[in-house]
Amino acid sequence: MLKNFLQRRGQDLTLSLITKPSKADIIFSVTVALIYAAIALPVGLLTGFLKIHVLQISTLTMVTLPLSLLVIPSFLEEVFFRALMLPHKTRKHTAQKQVFLSLFSIFAFIAWHPINAITINAVAYPIFTDPVFLLLAALMASACTITYLKSGSVWIPISIHWITVLVWVFFLGGRNVVLD
Image 1 (cartoon, one colour):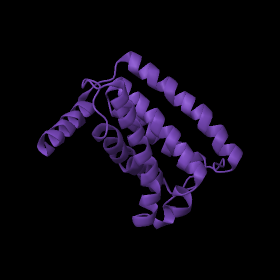
Image 2: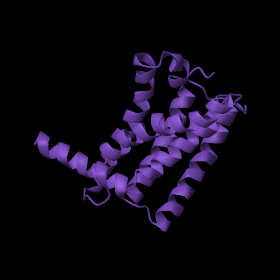
Image 3: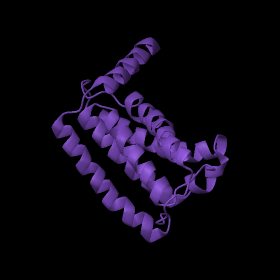
């Protein structure tokens, strides 16, 4: 039974990495991402969690930071919370099971951030336990989940996650690591 479960997770991961999103999937995903941004930006700015601030860093960091943010957190978190936790769109499930798995994935993503701050990244503790951050993380996880379920491609949620983190770190005062 465990062997079958692990085989299905591996198959779904592989499918999520090789599925090419259709043009309709991309349009849908851009729309979802824009709706997410239209909600998250005002919430973040009005609460003071987000502050307009252009990051001042060295040229080397300006080049390497986006690449590192692509891998951690964007790629690793989306592969785990979407591609491994959710069935690929080609796998048939009841609507109830799909909703349950989606909500579980979103809540696990939210819970991961305070756990990460407590166990791995203590510098991020004030950020990763902030209720506004957790709300924004829930909104982003929802957008990533919806677009993954529609497209079957983990590259779309990776892109949404990466662009969100890039904008936050480079233009909205987001930092959870020491730079330069």
